Length: 144
Image 1: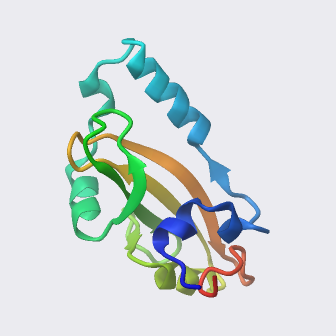
Image 2 (image 1 turned 90 degrees about the horizontal axis):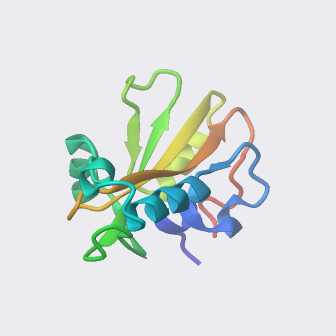
Image 3 (image 1 turned 180 degrees about the vertical axis):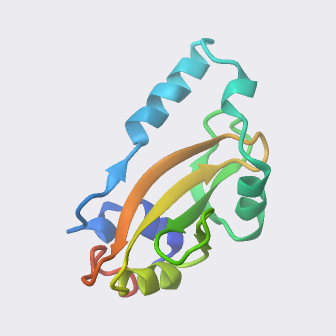
């Protein structure tokens, strides 16, 4: 079975055995609830940086989730990898193979999975995944 970047980023199956995964779904839910209650304006939550929207349009992976703010478009996942010898703004991982390559390296990296809506510019950090460090932390990245 092949694995998409969407699967790599979201499913518990691809993260089995991963240590140090930080999940931000509860913070996302709280923020969306505050917006729906009228405590936050749309311009306060739909303020994605233009570079994030550009990456989402050009190399992001469509998810199955509709935008919780505008409810007009599917969210797009963009995964940034940060670590040694990478640019300070990180590198965008465009597929599971990119993540698997970082995971095989001795250096430690962090992959930040961000969801973005290209229609209203909503964005939220969903998950931070540790990669590399000399052992495979995210099992089955290329084999699922």
